[in-house]
Image (cartoon, rainbow, N blue to C red; front, side, top):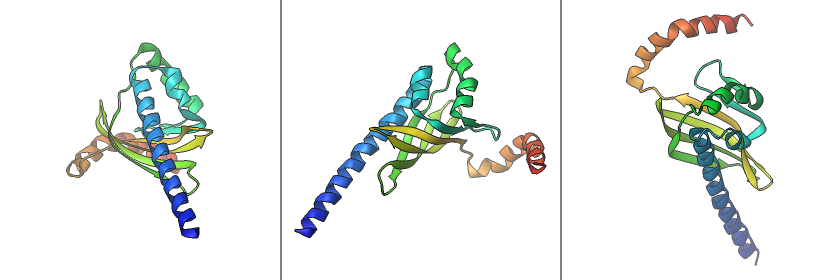
Length: 162
């Protein structure tokens, strides 16, 4: 009897995780599509109120409020970004209310990597933390480092003074 109950709980937990995994994939796909379609409210409604977006530039560490301010002119002009997931992996904590993911994206910058954390708010998943990174083929790291060194050396010096 005890083994049967445990098995049923495991099956139910697995089914919930699969359902939530589908919801998370749908949330992230909808979020990326809202950006591509320049749907400001639909895009930002999927970010938690205290959510964070970290962009590809070292200076881009946005609260939701500041990210909205920065992004609004792009959405207003319909000149946003278009990301499509090529691959995504989703993981859950033991409570089933926190999930984290990584994804490879097809973008105007070629392949990028997104990663982040989602939290379950009621029955919906909200993006709590998102990090967008450009990928650099290993054999090109030295060339890219030379390009970004003058800009980032100045930023490193500024940040080290804090």
